[in-house]
Image (cartoon, rainbow, N blue to C red; front, side):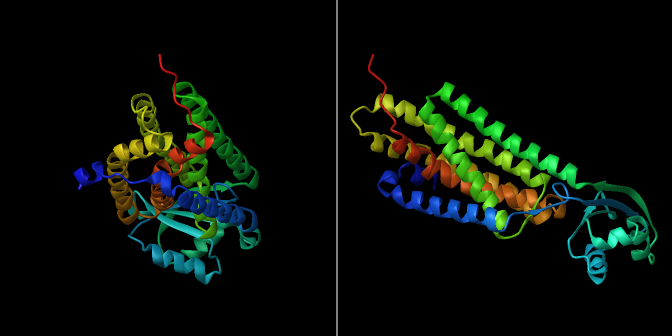
Amino acid sequence: MLRLIKNMDIRFMAIRKIPIFLSSLLIVISILSFVLKGFNFGIDFSSGYIVQLKFDEQVSIVNIENKFSESNIDDVTVQLYGSSKDVLIKLKDEEIFKKNNINNFINDMFSDKSFTISKLEYVGAQVGSELREKGEWAMLIALFSILIYVALRFEIIYGLGAITALVHDVIITLGVFSIFDLTFDLSVLAAILAVIGYSLNDSIVVFDRIRENNIILRKLSILDVLDKSINQTLSRTLVTSLTTLFVIISLLIFGGDAVRNFSIAMFIGIIVGTYSSIFVASTSLSYFGIQRPEEN
């Protein structure tokens, strides 16, 4: 299988307008969703309560969720942590909590069970806003640092190509969360930053081969050099992506609710990042006007 991939000679540059159109369409749809729909922020970025309960016997997450549904509270996240007796509950700020103390509300809801409240915290709107702002700065600083590093390591054109691919990955991954109303919390932000690093790693490998071939294969056109470089690194890109996806799929299946949002973001990001390292990063170099180095 790997030998077959290594021997491939796919003319990526001949069809480069198709992925450019597809990527542009997905980016436009994502941005429209940001503007018109926004995000379903978790309490990390909005406001609400974090409650940790320790029960004397094993409990069912479904039963706990049903109790909240019966009280007309649907915006709640229930997770097990540590053991099947330890429960983490995240509640968005509701009107009912202004009329009834949250502590009393929890005690009344689980009056049929023996438990203790291990932790009860309130995350205010101002704190959530500050976390959102810090998250945005974290992504911007990461992207700017990458631009500087790649520009120094290669050339400014390679830096622009890398940033184009990374911005593409971030926007589309965030777009999926916005369109499908998936919860966006700190774990998703961590996954986005991890995807940036993962996607950059793939792009750097391809860029390094492009730079080498651009010097060695002077008889080939720039587009042919790009094609050859992508084909030469294709097996490495696909194997890395598949092995990483196996781990993420395991997290999705066996990791539980605690890492579900992180796993979803990583799963989407790796697929989009692999696509961009093949079709976007290198293709963008042809539009930015990559030049051959002068002969010594």
